[in-house]
Length: 120
Image 1: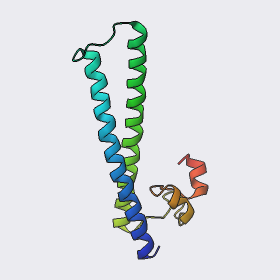
Image 2: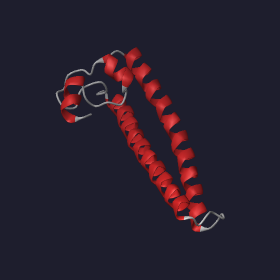
Image 3: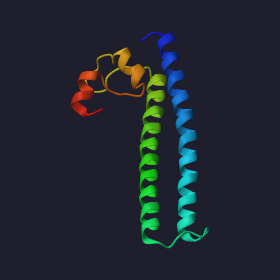
Image 4: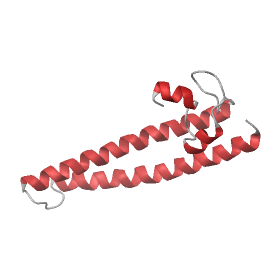
């Protein structure tokens, strides 16, 4: 991959990293507020249905946060691969990852064929 392409993907990854950090921060604050509402820092309905709904909302928010943290880790790993000079090389077969795939999933570690095999 030529230096201009690497710079393009580095910028793309950094922009996505910044977006994710903001989203993680916002979702963490929302989850803290939900937890505060349940622990009594706010008056909330004692109705069982309300409590169940709030619990499901917290679980979903926690799931979103988990997914965002995993994606952030993948992005940081991809930025490390750029520094190491191995970005864009499939970690399973060693062949170049298709540019089209990198445009869609810039942090991917696998080419399309290996991605179908590994689920990544």
